[in-house]
Length: 181
Image (tube, rainbow, N blue to C red):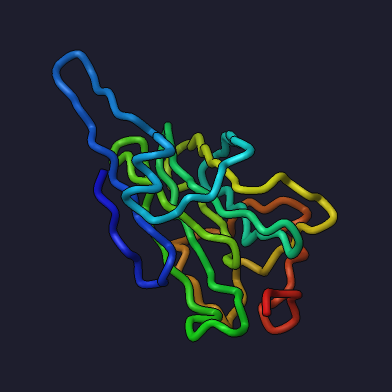
């Protein structure tokens, strides 16, 4: 596996070794020892999640204020623009974001450590999004930052308004959100 440090320290791009021929392909999508050795991240994953969304669906920017989750995310069908935002007030990168296209074709994964908000928008007709988390989902601790917060200035690459859940429609601005110290 190839590990690339993104513009945000701690957010890592993971490129697995893909073995392909005329029959198709194979790659090891996760191996705890290889992941820890290559990234230095030894957090244990406790939950796997899988979502399917239509083109134009935007999910996020989500995080948990208690039981913060590290996430290892990937796409197994379609294509998304994946976004991580540093929401640790003490970080020199507070309020900065990083975006990466994840697709079934490029097989890239993104490691998003605790202390970051996360979201994605579907760029293809549909997308299947899988992610591992380092802590369990805690509904009472979930928070949401507005996808279109002008202070963040995220370029989602959208030409039309995204399709949002009711929860995402009422996200808070970063300056009003409960974030990490």
